Image 1 (cartoon, rainbow, N blue to C red):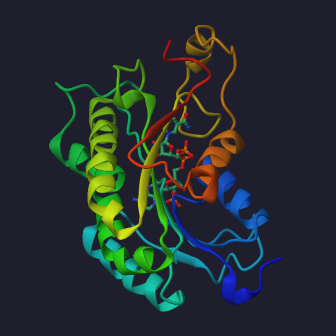
Image 2: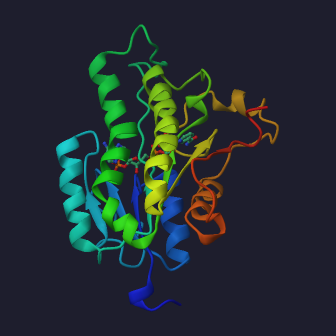
Length: 246
Ligand SMILES: NC(=O)c1ccc[n+]([C@@H]2O[C@H](COP(=O)([O-])OP(=O)(O)OC[C@H]3O[C@@H](n4cnc5c(N)ncnc54)[C@H](OP(=O)(O)O)[C@@H]3O)[C@@H](O)[C@H]2O)c1
């Protein structure tokens, strides 16, 4: 096990459930220090070593709150950040669970989705630029299959925010590359978490692998992109969808 001074540090947003939670477990098992972010306080029902002390409560839909969280993160780390994983995301639905399309999505909902799913990623990366540079770290943005095609359940605001996050990943890889910081994205398909809608089983029937993905399978790819095994991978968007794109 690495000594404390060599321990790598990851900042992970949306760590309280689903893909984020599996990612916490993966990096913890690999002996990283995991700093987590989400709106809720740390959940003591699902603890991991050092979890409570390394949790920052933040509402990423509020840019000022996001900037305050950056200051809080800087206080808690020793100048170095080896990975930033922008995983928090929201996918609002209509009152009866229906898809919100381009005709019916009100602008405040659209704006909130973009703040959480898109702007928070660039605010955090820019705010923690020096710490990422010092560690020669990596950034992973979590996009979605919905960013590259119309999805039956994901709304227009969600889809466009994820498409924008894919483009942001390319832009950031150009700008952070000279600093020695790699920037990549992962685009999950249908992964077994709370974000899935009723009716996903119909989509699964058309997926070549005939099953949902597991949060742990997504976490493994995030870990790969933050590891030395991916030392020349930057500006990529890896699809994790059991062949759903074919
Ligand atoms: N599951 C899938 O099939 C799938 C497919 C494609 C892409 N994705 C993407 O993968 C990522 C994780 O998805 P998931 O399915 O694991 O989602 P999830 O189970 O709904 O979890 C979302 C996470 O984001 C946090 N969050 C939401 N709003 C926030 C805010 N305003 N400020 C801070 N944190 C906030 C939540 O924590 P709090 O509630 O405590 O704030 C939670 O930890 C998302 O970006 C999603 O779009 C998922």
